[in-house]
Image (tube, rainbow, N blue to C red):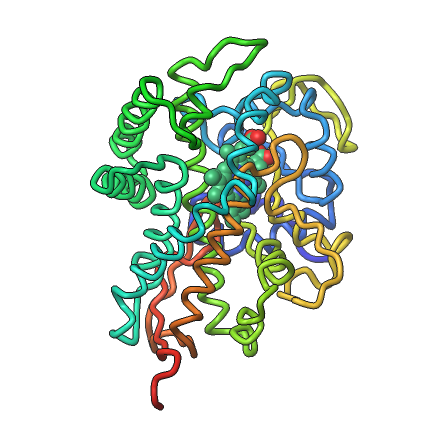
Length: 393
Ligand code: HEM
């Protein structure tokens, strides 16, 4: 038996670099030893680490409430992620439609153009810091185009800049700038209706017919930006890093159907929303230990995706898995509303990169910096060298 990792969990800080580097090892211990492991973080939390237990938590929103969905408390309302049934389904009723693959199809050309413009900016250099020059601006731009959709090129650029600032700075001021822009755009749609996502927020009704409050409207826009930024850009950066490490991966990703199977294995393995929060609202022992009303829970999706009870050799990227019921997008009523959009961005981003670049390597002696917190492990600084497709050797 391995040494107890309980002291590690007692002291765990989800935002500490050294703790993050040891986290997977600690979680493997927890899955083997105990149904839930207690950590002192944030005044105390039970961490749910096993696949089946995560499914149990997600299946009982009446017991495990989402009203504290993060690791830290957030001062603004973020529906639907912090909302329980029955109100939750009212929000999903108008959010699901605009984020189906079919509804997103009309944005494909604009996303491809956006990716190409970013690649134009560094292709001749033979190297790039991938996160700041591609992953961040691509995912921020995609969100601005789909969520804040605007015909006015100048204002759309303002939206892209504002969303990028949220991603890079994450300050209250950067959020306020996006909220102001969203409020301006929604006010316009009240005067002149359009067929886009913000219009569906303006037209939405909940609780049997009332329109959303202004706070709820802005909360919906904010949660989409929060949910869509670090997550997708993290997955994109991981794929870029794997391209430098995994022989044969570039050839696999050049196969037409890669985004249907291989992408799921990347999502399972990387789990860029590693953990979310719940709060117990009824005393229960659904996980085999007594849990009391008011207890805080961390649902560790990444841990479930590494559970040997569910996945063979889960700590390796294995593109030959037959079934891959991963929890990267969560499960149950809060399953990611942006999952088709994330997949589309990853597919377009990688396809455009591979259409023009090949033979990715890490710049020798360069630093690869990784994220802490929810997107733990995702590359935050990644210096790549590459060749141009079709260039003479
Ligand atoms: C690789 C990219 C992504 C990953 C791994 C991911 C992961 C997740 C996970 C695990 C949840 C469940 C949270 C919970 O149960 O508490 C979730 C929910 C959510 N995600 Fe994503 N996400 C991604 C991309 C996106 C994008 C692009 C958007 C926005 C356009 C988005 C918006 C949301 C929203 C609004 C929710 C809350 C849904 C609800 O509460 O009903 N996500 N996501």
